[in-house]
Image (tube, rainbow, N blue to C red):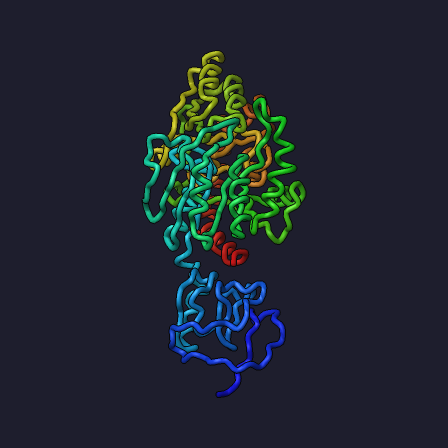
Amino acid sequence: MEPQRESTGCGYGSRPPTAVPRHRPPPHSHAAPTPSRRPWPGCRCKRGPWSSTSRCSAVTNHCTSAWEPTCRRRGGARHDGPRDTRTAWWNSTRNRWSDMTRILQITPYYPPQLGGVERVAESLAAGLGRRHDVRVVTTTIGARTVPRFLRTAGVTVRRHRAVEFAHTPLAPGLLVSLLREPRTSILHLHAAQAGLPELVALVARARRQPFVFHFHLDVDASGRLGRLLPLYKRHALGRVLRAAAAVIVLTEAQSSFVRDAYGVRAERVFIVPNGVDRAYFMAAREITHRPLRLLFVGRLSVQKNIGRLLDAMSLVRQPVELRIVGDGEQRELLEARVARLGLTNVTFAGRRLGPDLVRSYADVDMFVLPSDKEGMSLAALEAMAAALPIVATAVPGNTELLDGVGLLADPDPVALAAAISAVADDPALRLRLSRQSASAATGYSWDAVVRRVEDIYAEVLP
């Protein structure tokens, strides 16, 4: 019998083998011979190499042994057989993520909870769900009447009971859910609040599993615990961002911010703008001579600063009407403010989703965004697709998206009122802004966003 050379573990980085006689099983035998020694450190096979042809390494991410009955990297699946069969198996498995990988979209909130992050997560999950096994892991906040487990349009949604403390959802069951998922799953985190990023990073580190951080917005301090936010960002959020395999941001300004403020390496930062559903695209608006109908869409929160818009409405002398679509913690305060200002031309339409939201854009003449800060406003993108003239505050996020598209005003009620009045007084300006919105919106689609995210998965994940 021809002497065989002993394999000392992984072919990558192993010591020179020594010649020792050893029986080699026939190629199609399922009997696993006893290895001559323990696997070389770094070998990912549970039981080590079986022959001189064995080579299992973290570099190649697969085993080339003829037997490999228990390879951890391949989930313990047997793929015995001739070398040409095994080669074909590996070639098909190497690209398996493209149509079989489970993708976990992890988000603190999810529709019917209304908000930009929630709707981005929903649209991205739906797009990825056409080609992948997509599961949304979220909480029950804002969705108490919805089933906790739901599967629609290729996307499985699992909601975990949670309580909200200082705008931070706490859901212990979410941790257990993540630990039960296969290690081969892709972790895609959507976050703008504390708590969830640290939990996902903890799971990823414990399981040696890479994750993607979708950075939607750098929130500002609010409430009694707001003074702790700078400490949290410096000592917790920064570590999570630096630990991510990829950080997805919405704009070039955000890209610079996460690199400078949190020390994220440039090669790990990817710019992926939000997209717009095809249902929102409409033709440029015709000039009307009725009272101008204004629209705001979004969460009624401090960051959106709808109070600034209400103050501006009290200064506008032209006949205009404002419809506020959305809900949130500030609704009662805003309704009281409307009554105090005596604004009879302001209505609260509440939460709108799907076709009802599309009709909300179709029934108005102009969109107004009075925010203090934005990542990339999904409502503004939808207003652009609906060919609405846009008036917005000149703040981070708005300036990059709407410069040359809408009318930007200083973030104060007087400037905002002046911009609204200018559009109301000038039909030609309304028509020009409408056409600019329609033209700019053509560059945003969810199909392009989904393809870009898939490219990022392929580039940074094993």
